[in-house]
Amino acid sequence: MSIQTPDRIEREIGIAAPVERVWDVLTRPEHIGRWFGEDLGGGGAPAEVDLRPGGAFVIDHGFGAYPSRIVSVEPPRYFSYRWATAFPGQEASEDNSTLVEFTLTADGDGTRLRVVESGFAALDIPEDRIPYAGYESHSQGWVDVTAGLATYVEKLPA
Amino acid sequence: MTQTRTGGEEDVFAALADPMRRRILDAVAEHGDATATVLAAELPVSRQAIVKHLTVLDRAGLVAGRRAGREMRYAVRPERLVAAARWMDRVAARWDARLSAIKRLAEEPASRDPGVT
Image (cartoon, rainbow over all chains, first blue to last red; front, top):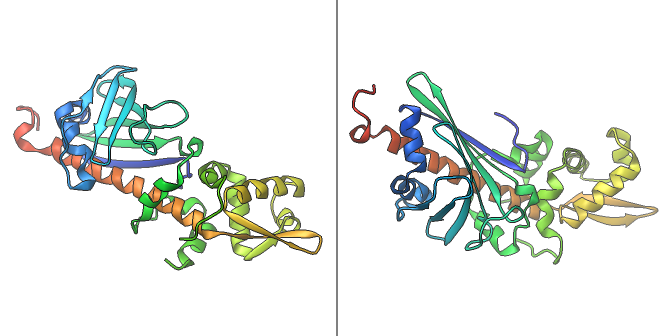
């Protein structure tokens, strides 16, 4: 497992479909509406997507809409946008948002899809958003910053 | 969860973005509590630099200092750290869920291009 710094989250998945197919699912409004709210039971309305650099990318997954801003579109390999998830309803700008980057890599007949969300260190997370983190999680994730610190955190009472 | 003082607690991520500050926080955690002098003896930076880093960690609510003789002794304050860690874990878990959903949609046989195996 790679060590994650608190500034970024990296996740990756193997998909048994060609890169072009994964690109479509990733970027077409009717698909985005379906995969985006998956962690909340799935299925949202089709997203508003203006698929070009600087284009609007409006995502609503039930907590509120995130008017995000597309940064790069390089079909079918790379797609990135900025969003202000700590500030629902706010337009994403350089200082209130994180950068989300998708990279698609052909892997035999399939695709490696990797997502990196970065820029947390520059955010001021408002106190009332932190409780969103209140769910228990078994993921080691970010706690692996350093071995000693992870051990220390694990020993803390829940 | 303890309510922390106002001002500065949003700085957790910025405070932890610096690798040396993470090492210092780690060292403080291992010691239980520690002074800048003790930390400077085991880390490759000056005592003065350690003091500056501890000030940033203190402002972010990650450590608390108390005067002990001529020096400050610092201990880790876990509340902010745990909250920040859970927040990041939650963000990561959401990405796992979304990637799984993308995988499922992309692999749906009905919508695959004919001719692609």
